[in-house]
Length: 444
Image 1 (cartoon, rainbow, N blue to C red):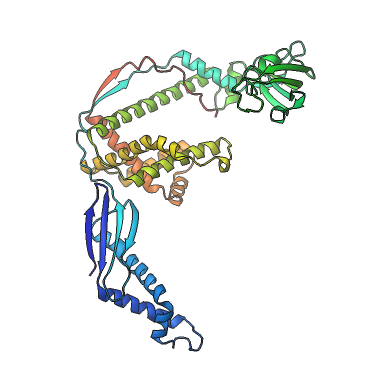
Image 2: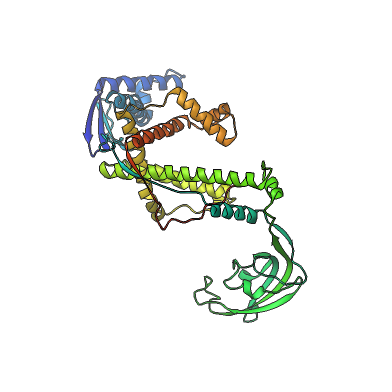
């Protein structure tokens, strides 16, 4: 019978040593040779008739290595199960030199979840901020929608290019009578006032008309990124090939109809109000959850497995890449994060890992569970938000092995609700420095 010894290296690290008896080692190595004898073919011997001493002389190292591997495979996970150890990760594994006539000993250093008995989580004092929806916010959202739905039309001949216009230009840049390839461009798009090409460059194009040529002289700053031309006087020869102005739509019923299922401007405004209310509720929910986590993490100090932290850092990075991909960025060209960048993400990752462990521990302590009915209701609600069927969403979660993650998220929601029911909540005015503007409502 395999002997297992456990040494605690820390609250989340253990060294587990396995010693497999000599008779088990011998039986396994003999079985390896028997299997080898059936399969191997050596010149001068018929298949299956190679003498055992010949096999040992040819394959001793291979058989011993295979035997050690097989013994580890057969004893490692069953041994952990026997000792009720749930590994988060295996940090390293090593073994003694293999000898066929001796017990086989190997050991592993593993990380395990910390044992947490959460304290001081009932009767928390929490703040809920009072926020009202103003007509100014509605008007700002309407204006943002108006800006997003502006159309481009040719700039009237009666005026030249001005702030906010969209230009297409050819630019030839020269210094010391030599062209500067890095600053020479064709069919370059400029949105006047944004100064994407060079600082203060757009103002030099004010008043230009279609097909006009203009020569502009600028002195580049000493700290210009391209050191070979920093501080130089550069001549820019600009040709205006196209110029369009932004035409904003009128804020009337027709505008509302163009946006989707709105018959009147008042219906659109009501949808904006509803959206702002949802945003306020979502913000309030996040604030409450963050307050809960702040209090509980403060009162419950414990070590977290490093592998869980690094896995969470990887998750944050993957989410960033997904956002870049959604924005049209070729993520294959995005450089891998440096160790310094990963270290910057570490505090957020540690907090997220602690939050997950604490919420799970509290659910166990309070016997909070997600029933099958609640799970199905959660699937249906999420499917409705995404505009798909519940069966389709469940299948997609199943394919991505995300069903348990979704159940865990629902469980956390129930724990937060329980904690808020147990808390003392006071309503207050929001912080004075809180910005008044809101993100734009997505166009339907």
